[in-house]
Length: 222
Image (cartoon, one colour):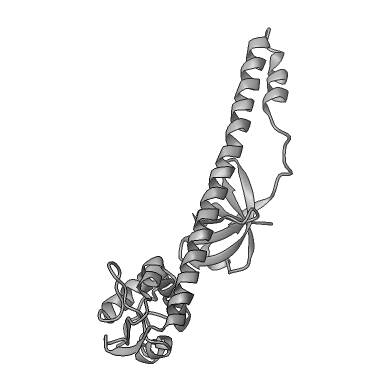
């Protein structure tokens, strides 16, 4: 009698699974150890009959692990690389450290750029909200009776955007590269799916900012 094994599809859970299976190689906190060059092939061989993780998920998880700031900081000249069992499997050379430092710098710059874009977006919304509230207060102050309702609406409402006919989706309906609409505030924002982790959907918006949302906030146009 065979037992169905639940597939691990979340990247963080895959990394945790690798740390459990190969504790002398992978870790979840503290200093990371530089990995043997070509360790993916070793993983694919050792987990060939393991139904819990697919090769695609292994590759994605390994990429996330080796691109993490914690790991990149560990790539220093002379540091020992390890294989899945923790045995020495090479030494970090100058070019490896330079590549890690460049990747780390680019990752930090991208993170700073995303944070700045988010702050700019929030700052842009603030005066619009304040202006709308001020116009609404003026309209209410001028209202003599019941008619001013129309004045309030004209003063307070922005120009209506074309209404989109949106349809809710599930995780299985989505795929990387798909154009979607993300519910952000009162109006949907267009974007493209870049990664899918079960109910966590990563979407790159038109302004270049990448956001993580739940699948119930993602829609497609009918």
